Length: 253
Image (cartoon, rainbow, N blue to C red):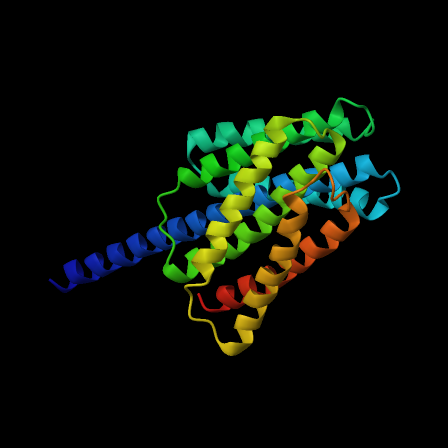
């Protein structure tokens, strides 16, 4: 009887270890897919700044850092997933990254902005599909953390389409995508306002909302607000405060 009891305990420990490893993989995959979502917007936003103004050396350097980040996330997913669909998607995402790198060999070709926007959406769609394949259900604290990452993602997304419209003002598709991203940001801001923040952290929420309000005024009238440098500075402030709150929620997990 004692041997049987010991065997059962051993099996439970092994089973627990497997489940724990699976859970860690699911969390790693969720975070990697979120990071790819962000990079998909950030890389192309920086490229469009560089295309619009060839002197934007800082943004040029940021493009290559973003591509390095993608490589890191791809390796993490390859290591963590056993899902065949996710592996197939990852192969296509890596192909898209290679295409972006080839575009950068001739960065100012007039066809490139549209191509970069297309590859950006491919990376985004792939990351969201990998995320949707996961069985892991985030906790309430993790949900709010994901919303903070989503605010950073949407900030880069609206700026990406703002810059696309500066380059191609009459593109109705770009305008539609910008309008949709603005609506999504408004929903996220409404969501995080329901969280019971301390007085210290409320200040960061207020800063996000204040800067977003100014940013939105420029986004709503792209043709007459051709101020990409001002827009970039304001959007950086939104992301900075969102990152502070993201780190706060990460500590609370």
